[in-house]
Length: 50
Image 1: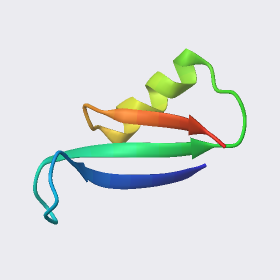
Image 2 (image 1 turned 60 degrees about the horizontal axis):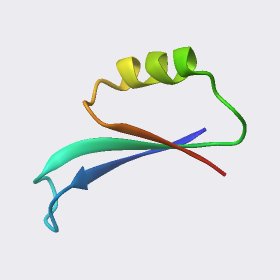
Image 3 (image 1 turned 90 degrees about the vertical axis):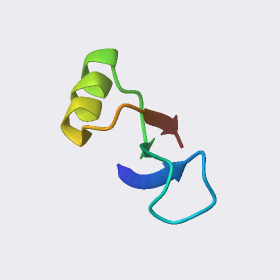
């Protein structure tokens, strides 16, 4: 799984709100996604299936 950290709601570096985008190869259950989001620690975490 590749994970990217982005600055949401801004066009400037290190401004806005931090968010995580996780690109997954297969299906993840809601429990797994919640555990990953908790580990990352951002209020916004998106999961995109490749």
